[in-house]
Length: 396
Image (cartoon, rainbow, N blue to C red):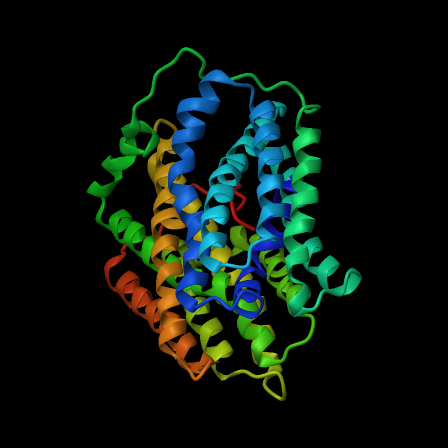
């Protein structure tokens, strides 16, 4: 689990800066590169559900995908054309995205009580993501023009995990001989939840809030670099520390605020974070930049983790997996795909004579988050305070 998220964190955080500063890509090309993972997220359930779960042991598929991924990550360092870069990173993403589910499958199948055991294992993924930032800034001291190293570091970790995977406990295909349809993998069994107006509003809000989320993932590292902040990559890991801290507070706030206001506070945090970025600077206003980073815990946990809990409580045991799969595909897939492309367009639109007008750029996701907040508060009426389950986020 540590290596699984170490690989992702190594290249994903700094990719926008690498494309902009080293390959001199446009905003649209940066957005397209980040959209690759969203596209892969939409496609990967079909691979896992219709192939990996039925024909091959999970640990072996995990190994093959990571070994192939290592070669592609290294290939990325040899490219100088942003368009060629996009196609390679898309193929890589298609290989990497299924490994998230496969790593979970290997973990869950070895546990006697996943509810008690999984959190202590999954937290190592967040630690892996954090370690990448500190290695790049504090150990290897990578400058902007050396960011190609991040892909080499990820390639080495991917090769290591690929080899290690073949020594993991045997995890045979759990659905061998069974059949499933495209509709089932899409989570169609959970469509019955749309009869509930509040759930429908929550679903729409979840897709829409992933648009500003995409701005954060694709542009923050580049923005902080342009702003003149030092040790940007390691500083951004404070967002993961914040995430780990605030997830511990979810049971406390859930029972006092209820799902509606937990999610609403998460949306407020999204708008505040982008306002902090828009008005902050690397001088006297640097505290605003750090505030925007640290707000990640509230942004992610209060909205996405609370949303997972809400979805779980609404779905019940019978369609629990279908409901979570449907939400994941809609948010990290469709919502993130729209957001990554929009973020690239907005960056290009507000770049004049090669200089990005970051205040104007950040007002766009801030406005979107505020609009989604108004939609949600006005039309979402369910304020469930019960049915709390222990959940962990799927994305660091």
